[in-house]
Image (cartoon, rainbow, N blue to C red):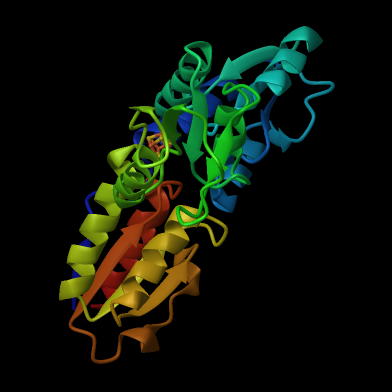
Length: 273
Ligand code: SF4
C-alpha cells in the first residue's frame, strides 16, 4: 500500500511558534498557564499540562499567562495587564496584523467590516479594535446597511473567494472602500494539497483534534470528493480492516496536529502496507 503524506500536514507557523514558546516557558521556574487550551489538540494540551502549563479561564494565582494564537479582545488584555500577571503574548503575527488594520481603519474614520465567524475568538479579538460601528459578516447575502466609507479586514482562515464576493457586494453599496486582505494562506494551501492527494488516493486519513475547525474542514473536503475518510486524533483509532483492498492511502492533518502524532500514523500505515 502506498502512503502519500501531505507536506503541509500539521502545525502552521503560528501554532508552532505558540507551542514552542509554551514549552520554553514551562522550563522557567514559575507558575505558568495558558488562557484556554493552547490549540484544539488534546494530546498537546496534555503534554503541556505534564510540563506544568495548565489551561485556565482565569489566571488568578499564576505568575505568567500565555495568550494563544487567536489573541484576546482589547479589554481582556487591559484587565490582564492591570492584574500584574506576566503576559506571554503568543498571538500569531498574522492575527496581530488584522487587529492593527482594524484599529487603523477605525482611526481613519472607516466603518469596519470583518468577514468571519462572530463566535470565533480571533474575530472577537479583531472586533475589539474596530470601534463601535463595526459589523461582522458571515453570510455575504445578508449585508446590513453600511456607511459611506467602509474598511474590510478578514478572519485569517476565510477563503479568498468569500472576500472577493464580499468586495463585489460592498462596492455597490458604499462610496469609499478600503480592503486589507488579512487572510493567511496556510489554510488555503493545506486544503489545496489535501484535495490533490485525495484525488489520487483510495482512502484518506485526516489527523487532528475532533474539535479543530480546520481539521474538520479537511475531512469534509475529502468526503465531498466522494472519498472514504477517517478523521482520527491518534494512531490507536486505526483498524487494519479499513485498509483491505486499499492501494493508495493519503494522510493529511490540521494546523494543530503535532508532527509526532502524524509520524506515528504514517509508521503504522507503512507497517500495515
Ligand atoms: S493559520 Fe495562519 S494566522 Fe492562523 S495561527 Fe496559523 S499561521 Fe497564524
